[in-house]
Length: 395
Ligand SMILES: Cc1ncc(COP(=O)(O)O)c(C=O)c1O
Image (cartoon, rainbow, N blue to C red; front, side, top):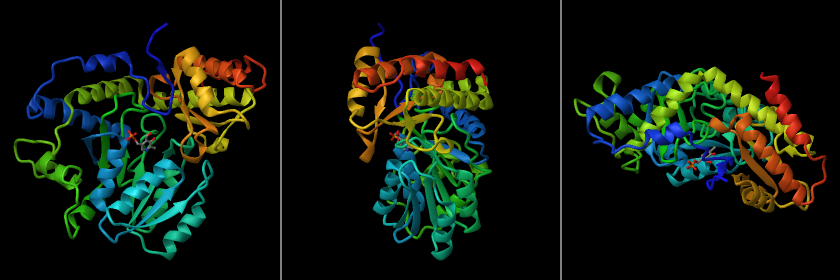
C-alpha cells in the first residue's frame, strides 16, 4: 500500500504529481525580473480568466486566512460599519478579523447549512448604513454554497464594498468576480486548484483601491496592507507605484509560485467549463452515494456544495470514529465536522484531481465500510453503485 494517505478532506486537496515536480528546483532570486515578471506576474495575469475579472490579482504568502485578513485589514478602518454574513466557521472568522481592526461589525447570522434569506439581508442593508458586506461563497464548515450573485446585487444597489471568500470554490465552482460585483475576491490555491498550502490570492477592484486610498490612517499591518502591494508591486502603467524594479512587500515563496503556475496550466489545459462540470459531477456522485446508504447532506440539495460534502451522521455514530476507520483501513483522510458539528458530521472533499471517479469511488467504499463497522445499517454496495451510475452517465 502507498504509505501516503489520499487527501479527501475539506482541504488541502491532493497534489497532482506535476505540481509537486514543478517545485523541484533550486529556485532563484525574488528580485530577478525573470521570476518577477516572467513567472509571478504572468501567472497572476492568467489567473484573471479563472477569477473572471479584469482586476489586479495579488498573491500574498500565508494561506486562505491571510487573503481574508489582508483584505479586511486593508479596507476596514476603526468605526467602519461592516455587515458580515455568518453561515458557519469561516464567515465567523471574517467577522472576528473585522472586529479586530476596529470595525463596527453587525453579524448577519444564517443557520448552519440553511439558506440565506435575501429579503432579510436586503432589509438589513436598507435600514442601516454599512460600508462593507462580507460573505463566504462556499462555507466549508457546512458544505453549503451561497448565492454570491444575488448578494452582490444587493451590495451594488446599496453601494457597499463586497468582500467574498472563495477559498473552497474557486476553479471548482463557478465564480464570476466582475459580473457578480465582487470588490475583493479572497481565496487560496490549495483546495480546488490543487496547489500546495502557502499562498493567499486576492483580487482588488478600483472601488476597493479608492476605499484604501481614502483611509484616514494607513492600515495597521505593514506586510498585509494591500495598498503597499499596489505601490511596490504594480507597475505605473497599471496604476501602481513600481518604477523599474518591482518587488512584493513580503518575499513570495518562489517554489509555491511555480506550483501555482503549474495548476494554472492544468486548468487551462482542461478548460474552466469542463473543470466546473467535472466538479459538479463528482459532487452529484458523492451525494448520490450518501443518499443511497440512507444519509443526507447537512444543507438541502440546492445548497449542497460540489467541492465539499458535509454529511449528517445518524444518532450514536461518531464522526471521529468513522474518520479514524477510513484512515486506518483505507489510508484515506476525510474530515470530521467543525464547530458545534464536530462529531455530528463528516466533511469529504472532492476537488482538484479528486473530483473524479478515481478518487471518489474508493472513498465511498471506505465510507461504507467505516459506517458498517460503526453500526449504521444499510445495504452494502448501494452507495458505490449510485456514485458509479452518476460517473457513467458522463454528464
Ligand atoms: C471557506 C474557507 N475560508 C477560509 C479558509 C482558511 O484557509 P486556510 O486554512 O488556508 O488559512 C478555509 C480553509 O479551510 C475555508 O474553507
